[in-house]
Length: 130
Image (tube, rainbow, N blue to C red; front, side):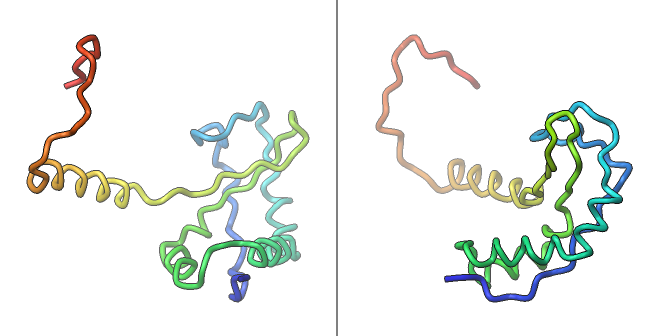
């Protein structure tokens, strides 16, 4: 079922951000042409692409609202990769506080609640990582 929401405004691209700072990006240029890409996004590329994505996504409206409220759509970045002749992008991940919450919950469960031992018996030659 398509996601039936209004497209949000396009993200504001920051010309001074070096795409090499992203863990998931590897580009070999310094002119990312973000100003021109921002114009294209404002001129309809973002709305068109969002509509195409919304027509096929499995994201439901409650999930989309959480993403929107967290400002994740605003944190998308797009840049020109001249070496590869393509538009590259960086999609924002879940904020670090949320991943830290997940790890904290795991630790509390393991340390304070779980009273069973693993059934798996590791071989004797497995190093102890503690």
